[in-house]
Length: 238
Image (cartoon, rainbow, N blue to C red; front, side):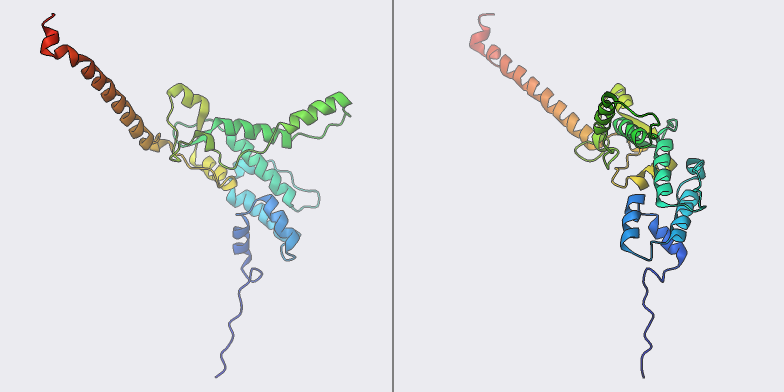
């Protein structure tokens, strides 16, 4: 009996809904590379459906509203890039909740500065040479944010770094679960630091151990200094 060959499953044969869900794990610049290397994904209708799916299903409409529709009536990867930048800006501008997930304030400041530079509208008035040099110098000092949003507030154990209350307020802030989920999707290398988990317990144990060892060392030095005075020959002079 001749066996019936099962149809092969490829990316092209996967249902459209599954393809859209898989493509949401890629950023706009990754999708641009996919579009250039695969003819199947170089499809304006697919990109339009993907952008609408991302705006409605992946991100909350409260973060993706006011995104301008293109003149041709279809979304492009440029719109997806605009959505990503808009979402990051709005997420980082939300008021701080009482509980949630910690994010580095230095990273937020750097990211907002970078987004402001990226979204800077083209100038209608032509700049003179001095203004052009100042603008180029300002742009050269702005670089994209680092992949891990919390790398500067991590301890050596990859947990929340211990610090005083004043330093904590100046170095980190909280964001809610939904905002952190969006930020984690756009920056997957970011370390999750939940506020209920508190600061690193291992660092606390090491600090207490060092403090106890230092106290024991000082007490031992005191006892050594007292030993000569406790000798009977020495005590005769007192």
